Every structure is written in C-alpha cells, then in structure tokens.
Image 1: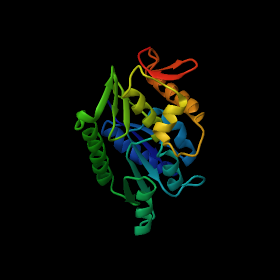
Image 2: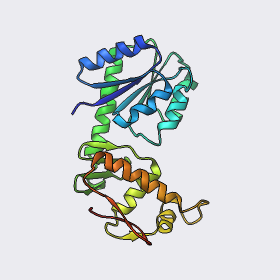
Image 3: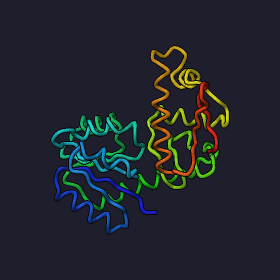
Length: 228
C-alpha cells in the first residue's frame, strides 16, 4: 500500500518540486496551498505531512496546533526561518522534524523514510499492547486505531473512549460512567458531551467500515461496544 504524503506550502513551485520527487519514489502525494486547505485533506489520512511555516492566513504553527488532536502522523516543518527558537517552537507545537529552506531533496527523502520506518515499527513491535476486535486494531501506546490497514484519525478523548469500551466488550455504560472514567471524578463539565463524542466516533468508524456498528445505543441506559 502506498504511503500518503501531504505537502502544505503556498509556493506552488516548491510543492511541484517536492511532489515530483516523491512521486518518483512511489509515494501517493496530495497538496494544500494554505493552512485552511489542510483540513480538507485530513480525510485522506496522510501518513506524513510536510508543513511550511510562513503562509498567509493560518501559519504552520497554528495549523500544527489545530490538527494535532486529529492526526498522529509525523509532521515535518519546512521553513526559511532557521533560528534555534523557531526549531524549538516547531517541536513544542507538535512537529516531529524541521528543515530549513533552501533544502536538499535527497535529505528530505531520507528524513521522510526514517519517519515512516519508525511509524511502521511502532505499529508492528508492540503486539502485546494492541487490542483487536475483528479487523479493528487499537494500539494503546501510540494512540492509533486501524480498521484493516486504514488509520482512523481520532482526538485524544475519542481514542480514550474507544479504548475504554473496547476493553469492556458487551458491557453497557451510562454517559456519566464514561465521562467519569475518561475525564475523572473531579472534572468540571457535563456528561452530555459524551453523546457528541460517540456521534463523531461512530461517523469515523462507519467511513472505514460501513457494514458494521461498533458502538450500540442501549436506550434509556447508555452505550455498549459490541458487534452489530
């Protein structure tokens, strides 16, 4: 299966240059020319994102911060800013690597391969920490969820809800029980948020596996993880 790489840069020439180089290496490549366009591409579940820092509208820092709860793939910043503070900021907002323009395409390819290789090891080297339900696999350490070989992008809270319910199959939990388990007994909030989280989780799972219902509603009580 081809690995998917998303290039985000407002300079079309740079996007074309990187795209051609990566296509030659057999990758599947998508492009976004502004921070706002990134969100339209997340449904394709990229395996790695190359993200320019200085863009009009949303800059790379803001984009990374906004999407980090939705994607767990490596993010490689690309920028003309070369100061130490910029590199540190890139890592602090959720980036995994930082390259300075002008850059070597050979070095970029090597870094991409290294990140993707590490991601593959993370998926295969920790089988004792992976929960399975049919073709669904949940990695409790890397916070990744797969159906077949398709990665499902979940927020941290969505992942924790899935993990909790998957560890207790066919057991019915009320909204209050799920909320207390995930947010904690002293959390300030409303358990009604569980309804919205379950709705989003179901939609994401249904996109990958429309023939199965993973979370069932038990009317008047709550929710249950079980085959449907």
